[in-house]
Amino acid sequence: MAAMRIQERNLLISFGDITTSYVKHSLQGHSQADLLARPQLVPLSAKNIIILNQTHSIDGYSVARQIDAQLRPYTKNGDYIITDQPDIALAVETADCAPVIFASKRTLAVVHAGWRGARNGIITCVLGNFITYGDNIQDIDVFIGPTARSCCYRVQQDFINQFPDGNYFIKRGNDFYFDLVTFIIQELIKAGIARHRINDKYATCTICSEQYCSYRRQRSLNLRTMTVAVLLAA
Ligand SMILES: [Zn+2]
Image (cartoon, rainbow, N blue to C red; front, side, top):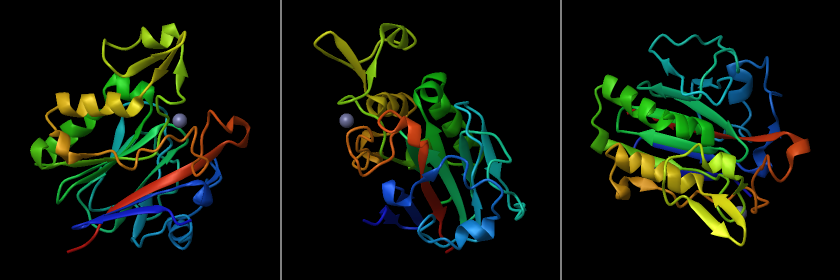
């Protein structure tokens, strides 16, 4: 089965799945040209590809016009990448955390949003960057990819205590389950994004859908899937 692909205006997104997965950090040392020559891994064409060393932080990396074409995967830390340059593939690796893509007509960001980054405000940080780039919040579309959801994402009371009140925890029996997508949507709406600009139809649960990598379901395999997005040149 091919990776899920979205093309809208000048934006191309490919959400990876189990068929395009790889062992965590196995892309270490590869050149950008190597990775871009593997359509199974990166099913879109671009001149460069940026993959960060993700640390569940709220820090990111801004890709300027003069990109270092020699920059190899994992040599910069951060959990989001933003650019206004076309033909640069921005990648995010996940296995239960949410890949989230933000795009105006001229600016693109990909975000690694796990519970920690989302709770610590990575959504607000990314939107702040869009404003720095000269974008208006109301012109941004958001796409949320496959991630752990409330059908499966069981959490303990000490986890719940780290969040403000909200309707993103679901109780079944004596157990509580977290819905990361609902939490992210609420953060986006609080920040001024209209609900109709938020596309969550690709946000299938990674834990119960075997089509995806899941840290919780397959911990020992240590697999990751890559989501990539690119702004196409006009
Ligand atoms: Zn599930």
